[in-house]
Length: 84
Image (cartoon, rainbow, N blue to C red; front, side, top):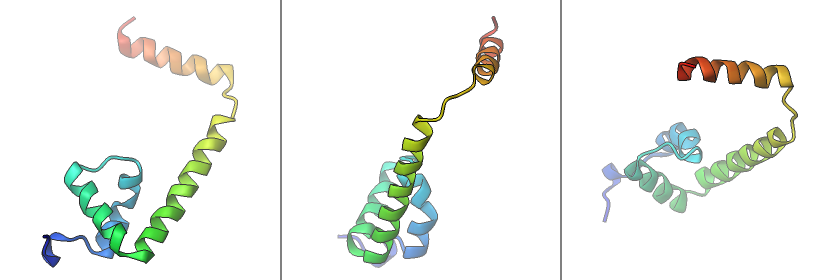
């Protein structure tokens, strides 16, 4: 069983929430955030809210048409980086 010193506070969880939602935390950090979210309704609600915003934004971005000129610039940078 974890002691209070092993648990994340609301402040720590809110600070890590973006990285948690982006799956950029270590397994240990992820576990501590998830444990906190299971026991804290306020942080869980904030996590759910931010997750829904992120999902909505990703969905909208999928429908934006990228101009060919922008795609060509990206291709050019990638070719340069690849040494072509």
